[in-house]
Image (cartoon, rainbow, N blue to C red; front, top):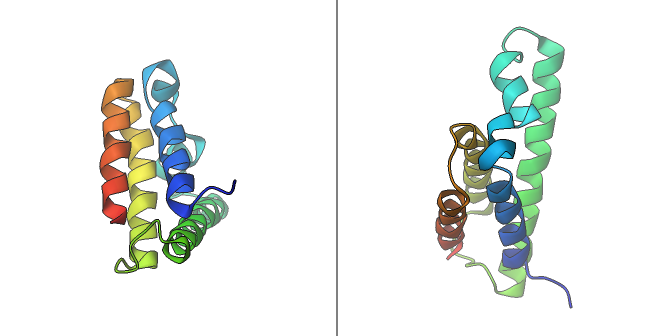
Length: 118
């Protein structure tokens, strides 16, 4: 059985929540770390970070669109804006994970994000 767009977004949010707590969370994310530390000073690094983030955002746009077509996500939401919001949320979860948050706290964020999809 094919997963709905909503289900696929839930998988992504759960993966990030699971990667954003405990020791793994404290290690952080290569993209986030590179964006914060190096992208300001190195144009090539900035270009690569931008491409990686754009790819993630495009995936979210596609998943939201899939969910709108299959009826699992409200057609009233703006796909592009919501995808960008999800990207910010996902990357922010990786940053917050570096502060030693618990699995329960990070899963609560994923649960709240799902409510944005209507």
